[in-house]
Length: 432
Image (cartoon, rainbow, N blue to C red; front, top):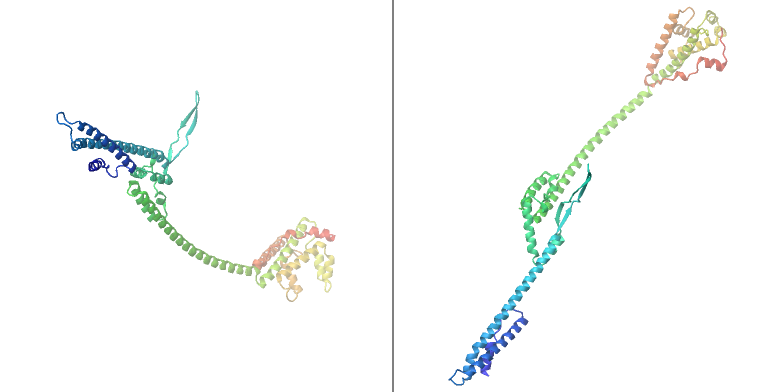
């Protein structure tokens, strides 16, 4: 029993711990023990024959000779098992790496999102016919899909690929190019035309650092956030300054407008008061209108006198009749033609307006006669004197209009009835 126990101890040694799984280790031990026992049996059988001439060996001699043979078989089986296990592990590791490599090769291109320009087709007319030239589209931009990049990092070996990708991007930035050989668009480009001079200066500095690779993407995003805050602060301050200036300018314009409005209102009030005129100007305006109307009538009658169509000026008969005491006026009217009566009425109206006496006492007859002889034809006046009196009436009428000032509103004498219209309306006949 003791020999059997020592033999089992000799053949029962295990494999190094951790090299194989428990199942693999148990199977290897069984194979190694079986090989050791089998070799031990053959060794014992051979040793039991003994050497020629020495007789039959004892059990101890048999074990002494067969033990090393069993141990050698066990060790050989162990080495074979170890080699086969290592080969299997190497093959499995190679397959695993192949699968990871295949996954990387299939997923890595999906990380990049490429935009292309469409192909361009141009048709040229030649002597032999139309010729079509096709210009293939090219890469217009490349960007990295963050979701695909995250998925890439989750597979075995993905993190190493991402580190390699980052290093490649850094080298590309240092060359001043983007993916695909196109010129790289800096993330700081929008801030190089910012309103704030400080933001523009910082953006240019950061841009140089990004293109040379001293600033990575994560740092660039942080810088962009700070630039955005600086720009917002500057714009807010600038807007506040503009608002204050606008408010000041608006207040100044409002004050000027109020002053101008006040000035215009004062001038308007003065002009309105001026146009209303004084009491004397309003009286002069009424007198001027009467004188202008009278001149229009006398001018028409004098045209009839000049054309020989009517007797308008006074005659010796009318003048003599006017001198008869008490009934001179009646006799004068009886001896006058309708045109003479019209002329005398217009002349008297002009004289009364010029003397401006109607608001008070009556004008004495001698004063009326004196004014008549001053401004209107009488018996014995030469044509030159008659024309001179007419000019005097015109000058006196204009003086009255001037005295009326802004109150006077010229009347349209063309709307006044003509002498012919008056004669036709009242069926007047000439007194000649």
